Amino acid sequence: MSAPQPERLLIRGARILTQDPQLGDLDGDVLVADGRIAQVGPVLIDDRADVVDGTGHAVLPGFVDTHRHAWQGALRSLGPAWTYPEYRGHVQVAVGPHLTPEDVRIGNRAADLMSLDAGITTVRDESHIMNSPAHADAAVQAHWESGIRTVFDHGWPSTEAEAWQFGSDRCHPDDIRRVREQLLPDDSARVTLNAMLRGPELSTPDVTDRDIRLARELGLRISMHVGLGEWGAEQQAIRTLQKAGTLAADMTFIHCCTSTDDELRMLADHGASASVAAALEVFMPGLGQPATNRLMAAGVRPSLSVDVESAVAGDMFGVMRAALAYQQLVRAGAGGPLDPDAGTTFDAADLLSFATIEGARACGIDDRTGSITPGKAADLIMIRLTDPNLLPATDPAAAIVTSGHAGNVVRVLVDGRTVKRDGRVQGGDGIAELAAQSRDRIHRAAGIPVPGLGRN
Image (tube, rainbow, N blue to C red; front, side, top):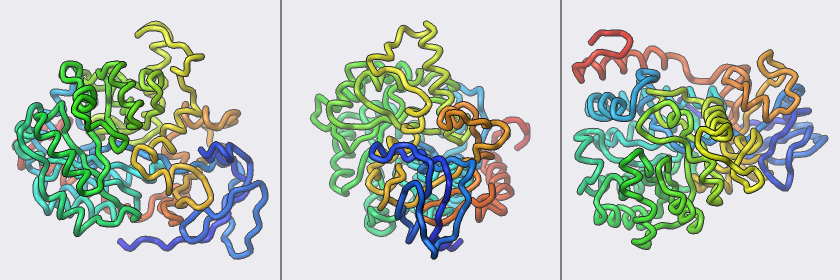
């Protein structure tokens, strides 16, 4: 699918939630030109631009999902009641080895379609389905096709999944060098490369050290899953990295559920970032609970992420609500007191920040997206505040966080190109049928029934 061309648009009369502390929130206009945010202000004039009526709408930077295993897009909603071991057993161990490169392309396209529909303009694709070079090629191709901004985190295979995790002595697949040199050499492009490493929780100290040196040799930012259940509490991956002298600001740590408070302070002291997958963490027993408030107490403003659509919804609205719901349970006494005056709590405005500019920072792309700042890429979403579930939108941020859904997102731009117009995502025709066919084929190859359908 060829990408739509950048447009010259003047969005007029909207409530603009810029996520830029210098600009703040305002009622006014946004001018988009040459794929960039050209101007933001109360009353803008441009005779060459197509005018979009923003009355009754909020305009935000697009949401940034800092951790999604996009290859599972065709395996959506299979196990909402799974525990973590059940998820690993069904998805990573049982069906993961049977995905063809085309299955990966379809899964990623389905995930990107869901993302764009819900106002996610950037996804950090944690791709641990690198079963062959062809799988990597297909995964990257899908993101180019969909039009979404992608930080592609090259991971490990789902073939022999157990041998690649929990004490693995296998080094990161060397094909990441080819991907860097041939597929994604340009760090300013819409699709860029990062390294998804296993780190101390999933590999040996020697492998961890070698993998980190490889990523840094290639000039790549690093992500790691840490603080996963009892195993994470035992391993203390962040502390291990700190002692090894490899903990640094180019790292994003995912989950941190059972990481200690001391480890979170180490993370903050080194300028590293964190990704909280709040919806999955409260849904899936075995991971631990969201570390959002503990991260804030340590001095880290986290980003937010979906994680696996095989278990939870693929939109940021649900993630924001899950984070807020867990905080309120803790404040009610379920997990100990929180002190709002000490900066350990958050509100709806904070959640929008976590879902936008903090996500961009965690991906290392806050210089080009994450806020409505002149000069940045025009990654924008329009949310209709007059829809029945949002009106009267007394506080737009609170209305969006507590009540918003993908249907309220009426327009989405990535790099100044409209990818969702009048509530309909562009280029999504036929994906539903392809995803269903892919799901069935994968399960037949694995010799196990599709959950809920009871068939091979």
